[in-house]
Image (cartoon, rainbow, N blue to C red; front, side, top):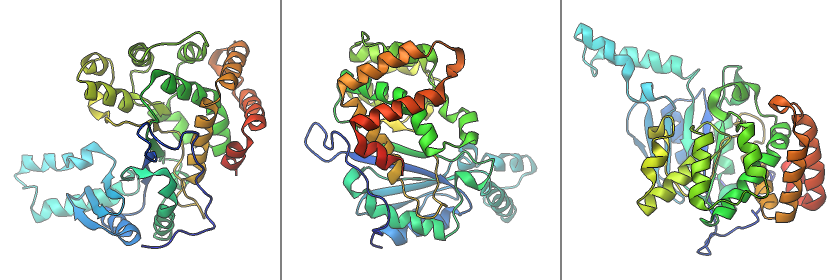
Length: 355
């Protein structure tokens, strides 16, 4: 295993570094990239972290039994995963495993490599071990991986899935409030790609819902919090997606999942895991020296603010009194205001997250 490079930025500790059981909280990573084949990506992961390469199909595979768990790699397209492009051949009596079908499949996958991202899904890794993967991102970069900036057509993202510190409604509400307050600053500080912002993948939370959540008198129990979220956000495509978490809660309790699933578009695509699903960051793996550290540190800032109830209330009230224009026309001014106020109170994480 290649040792991490000291020049890479550090991963800052969250406000609550351990879960309710006292274990170091873990985080899963989802990295979307292009210009590498499935086979090449699997081999690069194998070289970086060890394990055993397993190829399930031409579009899916894994690197199993690494020191961290299993890494999954796939072309991020259901039609490709299900080989739907071969269906018309059956009309002409061409079998899916014939030489002709293999030739067509090779051509389709070669073209798809330019447009359809390869997605690397890591196992949950303790946040204080994330630096051990820094050499993986460097290897992918050296192999020619393309990222969000590689084309105006790319809307590739880096998704972080931080394990929740507990399963209490006030914790979820504080995190959500903090994210809504800091989102405009994050977009500015991280230069969130325009292509990603105009595609449906990270659509804004509705303003009505923002105001509901940021109202200091809003103190729902867990069931009400989930119901309100589903009513206003019947989609996975939010920059902070809580559906996997809420699905996990209902699934483990064995109740309530039907009322949630019936209200959500594409429910069959919603995973179930005890994490926040933070979808806002770009993938910038092709940029010199990039690692997920700065985006992780911006998430840490969200958790740091969530852990300051008085500051959270102050900023929530300021937001509610400031935004009286349609379409949130004052986003830039708000980003500056919240940055200056937060940096005065918790300067370390926010300053490091802007590097």
